Length: 303
Ligand SMILES: C[S@@+](CC[C@H](N)C(=O)[O-])C[C@H]1O[C@@H](n2cnc3c(N)ncnc32)[C@H](O)[C@@H]1O
Image (cartoon, rainbow, N blue to C red; front, side, top):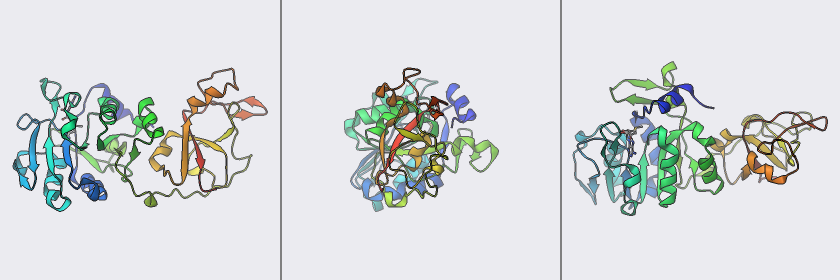
């Protein structure tokens, strides 16, 4: 799941990936009704000229659109009246010059909804801050953050979901270079998703299951009462019990279709297997066989 280029960018703290207008224009309108009356903050949009400034307040544009390169601000301000947004504020921090307002230091009581593309290197910390402050959010993050312990925990507590876009169409660097997802250089955009706690229309996310269960096709777990499913597309449509699926399942998770029960690691609590308790093991001929990569435990609600 991990994308080497994105991991390299994170290691080098190369966090300057500017979101493109088409990605914002494709995702934000889905939540139009939930933006009504909201005080919106874009907290990771560093620009020395406008740190923590209102761009829009109660029907009035306070700062000219031409003063920003940020497509979040451009989109929100141009739709503010139609969406009946209360206010739009931008802020950010430049780690190199140590200037601006860190997202950690923001007084979140002044805002209702956070919309941004935070630095990938501090994504987990950023989400934790928003959840702790009980804020609504719609933010871009790397797909592999799905495997972060805290991020999974938010999913299990129903505090976070994945937005509608399957991936982003591209990013622009600070120097203006474009990295389109459909080119070899665009792997960062291909490996990013929207994370949100806004309401989603799950009728648009029904995973179509085509595989039928048989005990020949699917291994049981040795140390847990359930079966292992190696690929999301192989989730059988007719298995009633618990299934251990890859973490990428969260991208397609529909809470009306499936119940999210926990992670593979939690299965160690069954204490049925005295070997490596941190893992689920598949079974072959009555013996432990393989320990698949981290699993999510799910149940089909519709059967
Ligand atoms: C991935 S860029 C996104 C830029 C812009 N919001 C966009 O997508 O159009 C992340 C931005 O967050 C800023 N930043 C870095 N550390 C931060 C922090 N602790 N708090 C707030 N902003 C930070 C960086 O300077 C950078 O401009």
